[in-house]
Picture 1: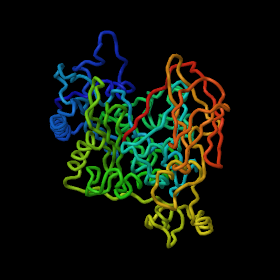
Picture 2: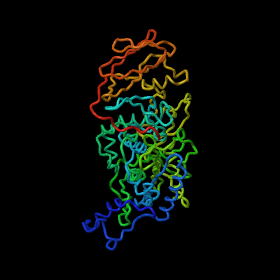
Picture 3: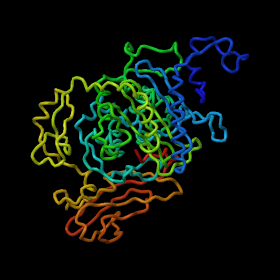
Length: 513
């Protein structure tokens, strides 16, 4: 191939089977001594190199200059194509950088592994309803953070399938809160993300949104494990390193949770809200796929698989410059699409195995519960454990939304969803905020209630302001605070605390798919 494979990938696999590297052999081995036969498919490698050139040319006006791709045979673990740069020999274009091994923020591409872990641990079920609503986090050492999605809108109550397929940020963060960053970080290391070496506090809740750094190689390996239903597989680039994956005794969790995640990622209807039915992610055969875009549009990713191949693509800039109006679905996805269509040009892959041992039951798409005549969101089928049938039949089909939905409900036009009870929704009771020394940050006080009446804002028994608006910005100051709001004959109070940070801020969050 015209773009040489990263030598480190080869050295890691040949070292156990060849004599140690000596000082007289600084390159690692002598050409006359060893002949290494790689697993690379030359025609496929050249096809992908040509496609990368075309993609970069097409996106040049969007400040896109580099791309990388990796193709792995799911049955053997063989790396069939490894393109780390569009032009290895062009030093002016930073061609000797290896986009397959480079560490970058992965955007939303780690979310499937969080949801799989949550399913395996029983934290969520396939029909669990998650809250995609405005949510505010006091991040230690950083300013108040409120994750948003690419569309900057909120869907309210959503099923797990919809939350994952549409790459919704708030539900993912809420699931991570329950799983804990520590447990999720340990799982990612089991999957082969060896460069996530910092503490759980360092990454924080942003871990599921891309606050760490991983490589395309690591992403491809993790999705290869998913494609093999949890069996631990190591990609290989040397012919004699090929292993029989079917007989592998090492696995993570039972196959059923991986089958569930695969089923969700291969459901074009589930992701239609964010990506549309005619998306570049939809192919004429069964394929599971996830996109990702890092903060400030510096990296776009698309990783997915059929029953035969795992394909991982990255599009961005080696120097870290942000792209212009390019996301995972418009940057890396077209390249991913072309590669998979080429791989299956003459033979379509088999369909994915449905989740084994589970049954499908009808649910209301809005509530995740037994459908009734009042189900306005339509009726869909979802997977259940047979042991849950009794609870499914006994549980009330009425969905009761708790207080975390108050702000979202206050924005809805449907009269049945309007909230008239005066409630402080930001800050929450016992919230703990940390501000950086010498920096300023503002907290938005927010309420739900009757927006037609004036509001009195009181802080530690001192009146701040009277106004008709249902929000007020206040500059964070260290101390213990009690916020009280009064509106007509109603009032509500919460207590919260503010302290100065003792360490630097954590890494940033990803905000797009």
